[in-house]
Image (cartoon, rainbow, N blue to C red):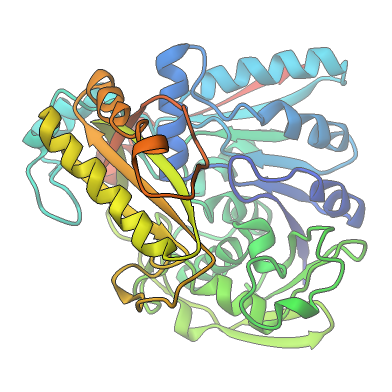
Amino acid sequence: MRTVRLGAGQGFYGDSPQPIADVLDDGVDYLCCEALAELTLAILQKDRQKDEALGYTKDLPAYARLALPRVHQGTRWITNAGGINPSGAMKALHATAKAMEVAPFTVGLVTGDDLLGRLDQLEASGADLSHLATGESFDAVRGKVLFANAYLGARPIAEALDAGADAVLTGRVADAALFLGPLLYEFGWTADDWDRLAAGTVIGHLSECSGQAAGGNFSGRWWDVENHWRYAFPIAECNDDGTAVITKAKAAGGRISFDTLKEQLLYEVGDPRAYISPDVVADFTSLRMEDIAPDRVALSGMKGRPATDTYKVVMAYPAGWSAETRMVFSWPNAHAKARRAADTVRRRWDLAGVEPLEIREEYFGWNALHGPGASSPPDPPEVMLRLAIRMDSAEAAGRAMREVVPLGLSGPPSSAGAGRGGGGPSELLGMWSCLVPKNLVDPHVRVVTEKVG
């Protein structure tokens, strides 16, 4: 039985790259870095609006400096840090490799997830771009879309590896596809081997969020997680029959156990019997997980069903501008003071003719986390008011926040500013998801290899 070791190297844009050293020192065949979320794409779009050369994750060079020296020692690197500008990311990779003076290596670049220039053509070919959750017509955002990217699957990654890539750089692919791709290449799993594709998908799902599966964000006995400051990322020891063991680097802190993996398994899952990915529909209820040794959990039994004939597509469009204030009020009557401050600002907005598109009012120390489920508190030592507003322009949002400033001397007593303070308005992007037939996307997916360094 052949075994391939996959190491998680990143769970989000801004994650700590430090645990990568432990993962690489422990010995892995592939380092898989998952950098994207829908929020991340919105952040990258704002970058690209300021500079057309951007649109990829700007921490790509930091990860490259850790990964590239190991490429020539047998570890291959896979990342979706290309974001909404994989070609720009490739240029950044060239620059980083040149500065490091590393020996030449081959990069496989996966493109074709960008559908922005083809939306009219897709509709004309029969694609329904209505909102996936609400059914709202695409006419609501027509002509306003800033990016549109399909969640590609694992097959292009496998193709890049088969073409000799030492590193694979992609745009938007499904998170688990970063881990499934090398398994398709190494084991030769076919496109209709649904049980093994489901096994590879659950391995990817358990690994994609880095420290969250290895004792981080753990709601069990979190206080017993050892060496919690030395973050651990999962390592998957994968067999060609679809079974696997999830573990971690011996030098790292953290914990791998049935309980830590169970929490990650249920993360961002709707129907656990039908976890839909581009490559397979996986039945998570068929999975068997078993603690077999400290920090070693065996996986087996995964079942899968045929993949759907569509890709999920995520788009963004301008949704106005936001501004916010945060003020802390102290005991006694901290909550009452905070509510009075919010009421004062709302009445001042009425006097000034401010017409918000949306207002968000929260009280940290009372309902910021629990919302309507929060019970009325006793008189706490302090409460922080967060008052956020959405307007149709930056100027209008800034003018609205000007009404907050006089509270310092004319509002309730014992207040202090907190958080953003004088930070200016921020542009908001609305998210729009839909489904597009795969046969309209796949012919445009390209895998090219290029020498770097």
